[in-house]
Image 1 (cartoon, rainbow, N blue to C red):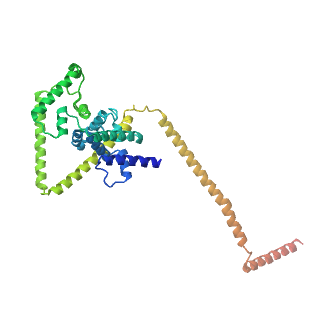
Image 2 (image 1 turned 60 degrees about the horizontal axis):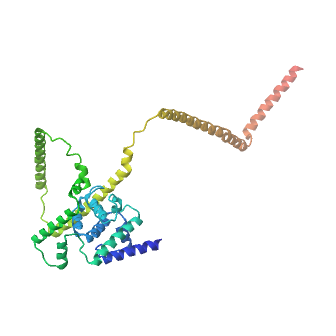
Image 3 (image 1 turned 90 degrees about the horizontal axis):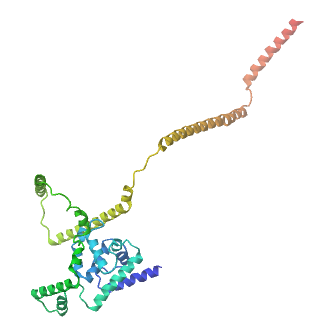
Amino acid sequence: MAAAVKDRLSHFRSKLEELDCPYLGGVEESWIEELLFKPGEPRLRLLQWAVGKFDPVIYNMLENQQSKALGRNDSRIQKLLFACHLLGLCKSDDIDLVQGNKSRNKQAVFWENLLDLIGTIESSGQISHFTTPVRTASLQSGTPFSLEEQFRSDCYFFDGLCRQEDLQNVFRSKVQLYPPDLMKTTSGLENKKIPDEKQLMSVTEKLLSELEEQSKQLDELRESAPLCDADAITVEKVSKTLSLSLTTMAQVVSGFLHCFETEMKPWSKRPAPVLSEVGPAFSRVHRLLSRYTELIQNLGTIKRSYSEICHDGKDKIFTRQKDDTGLNPAELKTLQGCLGVLEESLQRLREEGR
């Protein structure tokens, strides 16, 4: 199994090196695996480069969107999904495959098809973006063309496209020119009523007062913290660091939103639980168990006391009896005196009886 995974990574690395991939300079096989199969910014950049290898216009469009990634439906991922769908690599709603959340087998098939497509275009020597026929011929030959020729060619090309299909069928479908995140934000705005002029004036005055307050805070901030003149290298370094931090923060936000949408939001949509009368019953049972536990503890204390009285007291008495050796000499003399007095009393009593 490990040998098959290693062979697959070597196969992908050789294909990427043939296409002059800029992300493979002095890297190991583990980085190739993370670059291809693990979700994150490096994988998105590699996919963006691969799609841009097919069409540079898509690459420029995605490069302008890379700092605007916010949430699961951000513009850059949606454009990558749209481009991959046009190339026949995935479905129109298969955003998990573009992000790298699918199984490795599906991702391997996805990368295999994409790299084969790019390799075919590179080997055939065709132009990697779509233009009109006149511009394509001019680009291939290297001869310049005038603006008038380009305009005339574009008009002929567009006229030919319009004659192929009925234009009524073209305009029947509703075209969505905005990305899905903006469409979700602006949905229903056309149905809202136009606000009153007085309401607009009040909002304008409120915005004006807020703008003046923010301007004062900005002036105070400029006075308290004047900006220092920095060279171009320092500014570029700080800009790259800030861009990397924002990209990392966008990934964290995207991960949190994905976790919220998939794991936390379904729980919030569930109905509130219906409470029963089990709570008071549990309270009564807990009190009874507490009393029973206290009774058991008291019985244990009585048992220990009884054991100490029976066993420990008996041992102490036995020890005292064992250590007792009899009467001492003084007590013996006193006992002898008492016996003598007793004998005299008995003898006197006998004499009186005669």
